[in-house]
Image 1 (spheres, helix red, strand yellow):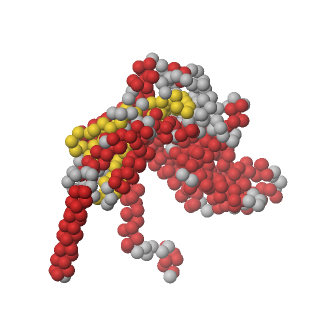
Image 2 (cartoon, helix red, strand yellow):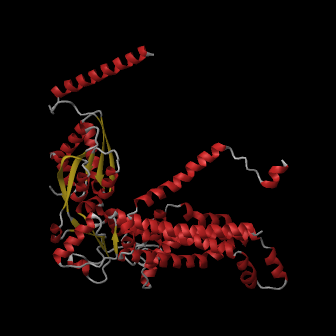
Image 3 (tube, helix red, strand yellow):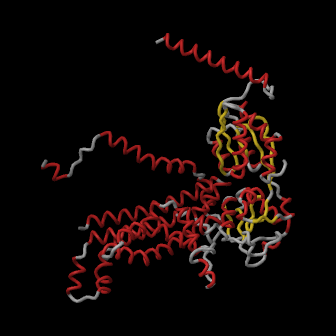
Length: 269
Length: 262
């Protein structure tokens, strides 16, 4: 008993390792299979073609914009959900998290009926001279829609873990709520915010279904890297595989970065 | 143990003989005297644009040939060709263009030669109210008109490009979609003022869109070939299905849906 308490319990049955290996292979094997199919002699020309670079550039720009939008909108949302007290709080949380489990194409249809030319807000926006359909703005909106929950979940978790002791102390010392937020709360949860932002960026980068349904597909305007891969696959399998590898590399880097941060957050207290 | 096995084998042989006899008996009285009555299951891989017509033809085929089962799988022709070369169990492949059939033939996966069974041309699809007042192909290049087309990598986009070149009208589309159904969707939802899709797509969409035919469409006629797949385990049934598609009955169903004769 004592021994297990001191060093943690490590007696995992051996068969668990077998199943865990199968589970790991299910994820890793397809990635390896793709790696094997890469046409290395053509790799550089394929990923540096004009359409590929346009798609990569657009993906990076829109993902950065939607990550920024996620931070602007997601931080207040997470604060309200973690610290606020109001009726329908749990209901609000469920709705904010919905895009996590919703098929992206459903999100795209929903966005279409909101911001499309015939949509709920689209008609008024069109009168005001703002057209969202087929624009880069539509891509950013679609990405923000699917990525926002990642930031909210990460940050809300960080806020709950951090607790509100320091904030209470600051308030008793006479700091106004905005000062407390700026000087105490935000610095306290900065690692959580950073990991949430990184995850949002990764999710935006991979967004496909909502963009295809809502924004369309035009080189340099709305055709992001996943849409370019989907299109290239029709005619040029080598180009599709090469571009997929680029996306995998970026995703691995991003997730690795985020995971490293989260571990360090958990170790701190 | 051996006894049971012999009995089972005997039973199977008897059943097979009975089935064969039944087939012969029905053939002598039936209209088609082409030998054995086809039976069993076949899987048809068909281009997405054939969904409505082939679903109906498969039902007709099953009711005409009791004991047969036709499974259908619809997707883009390029996807289907890739799936078949990767070993997907298809008996018949019906492609929306010759290019993807040629891919299969190059991989030695076609029995004999493919038969052309239909053609399709592009038409302009607009919302029922025709908000941009489109009446010709040239109208699509008017400033401010939101046109959606297929990307040049897919067959409908290649046809669009051919027409652009032949007519000297250059379009500046707001979106180049990767499938014809995505183009149609943008017109149905009225996000786009016009889209270039196949005649059959407009017929299939009913009154959700209006079709505007244009003479330049004759410059890019898509031909649909059909063939038995080399790995088929029931080539006889596959051939019977192809005969139905290329025969008068299949041709009527196809022309009713807007397809042209091959």
